[in-house]
Length: 150
Length: 189
Image 1 (tube, each protein chain N blue to C red):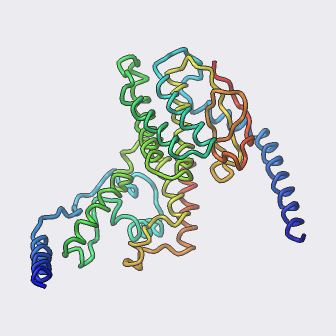
Image 2: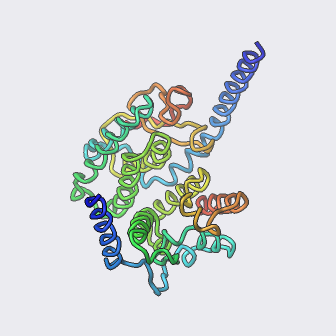
């Protein structure tokens, strides 16, 4: 019993303690000349879909939810964002080689088609990030056309 | 009984579909060949052993996909990564250098994905990786005899190429499901 209490107390201290650990926030006010929407002609409806459903993890600017202030949620998100940006960063898209741009577009199309992106867990919390069937069709058709034109 | 009739009907439909597509592909062959040649920098068959280790890794990967062996495919991907990091860029001319960097950057990324993913996803990345290796050979050359093969049904019926060390068709995109689907487009060396 005593041990049990000690364990609970320790856990409590740990949970409170980690709240003070610093985190890096993925936010910047910079305007990126290499942004996807700057180097390519992207219609507004596509831009909106991308910003709502992809940019949180695939750009240098995340629109954070309130619960990001709580650890260990923060760490969890930080990792996701880091991974996401490594795979694809829309802010830097224009700096990719044409070969890379085509290959990234193809991956985006496949990920959307297979419902792998936006991540189901992310879409569960961010209701407005979920792509409807019509959204998916629009994005896929537009991106296929773009890919062939590059 | 009914089920088996359906099965036979389906099989016939499926087989004839594949036939039609490969016929269609033949007529499209000219087009896709033209496009591919347009993209390659200099369509030569230079003899060079600079690319040998990269191609060896690629062939391990390709044969693993033919045999539906995702683990072995990942090994091929690892071999390719090592080969790219050991590649002697000093032997390239200045004009080859930039193009090589683009190809290598892309190929390495595909190899990384192949290393850590299941076979369906490996095949997706194998499509673009094959293009990269093909372009690399056009750029730098090889001393191996290779065959550029084409499967009209890969990549959601858009068609995709791969390279093989044998003249016989063994399809890495479908493996045992459609082992013989495809045709030789070009012989290298």
